[in-house]
Image (cartoon, rainbow, N blue to C red; front, side, top):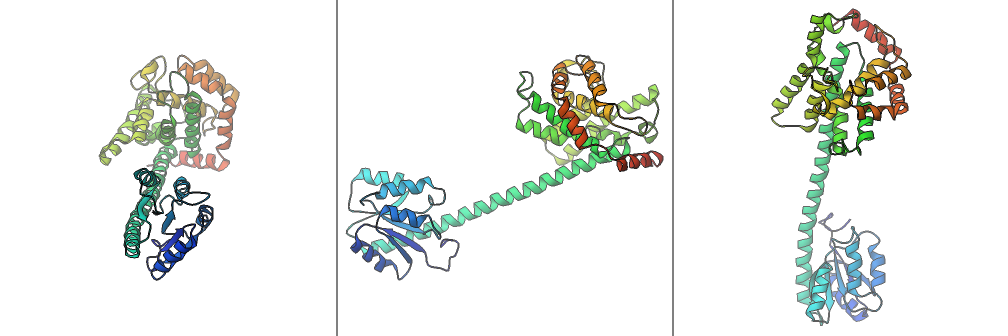
Length: 383
């Protein structure tokens, strides 16, 4: 660690000069106040700088055999760990171009030979104070960046848990499980990744959008929380009136998310996608879906992806009132739905990766305990 990290220890200064008399002079001048390291050439200086602790300041002769002081400074600028060490050049040259070149390579000052001890001590002291202040600000910035990253991770974790809790609440009131949430999340992500380079979708499906889709997908059925149990948990076919009530879950879901966003007092990207998915995932490509009867590209891309994911999972999943459909039959139904129920390109993407969809389904399959809990929920519905 350097002096800036241990303010009560003397600073360390590396003096680099090929003339022994100059090294002895500088060492004698500085050692009463500072720790002094010496190097008789540029190569030795670079070897010293590979170790720890690093010096707080370098006094560097320009004219040396082998590596010149300018070349040493250039090497130091190329390395992250050494580029912040201030360099004061020691030189007998007074040419302006040399001074400009040295400053461009990170030098903070020049001391011309023959050396004036008071001038050397004053300039060394000044540069060490500047470095201490700079290091303090850099450390504070690093701390703040780390703190921002830590708090961002905490916020994201809380956000993820909240989403999962909200989505699970909806699922536990339905004849489905929390595994349905995870499966549809991964289905949507897979579809998005398959379509990210497609001419119709690449304007939307970048890395950020895919990440937001994955986060927002679990809220697709959040509106089911507002559907009465006698309709939501009915094992048989719904009447026309009951189905009209069931269809309101899309609007209820969108409005619930909108209220949450309103309370935040700001627009949130993943909630925008969550609203789209919750409200429009029951729309069909030919306009025969609900709640608005949207058709074709008028249906948000997010909802078109969820439509395929949701239907596939509903088909293959075992419920208390039905067995799960074999994967191959579910794939055939999705295939038949292309162009009327589903966006044909989204359907084609699904059909190109059916093995991957089955792998996701197997990975997050419902256990016997899951089904037992569903059965219990059916017999003891929420009041």
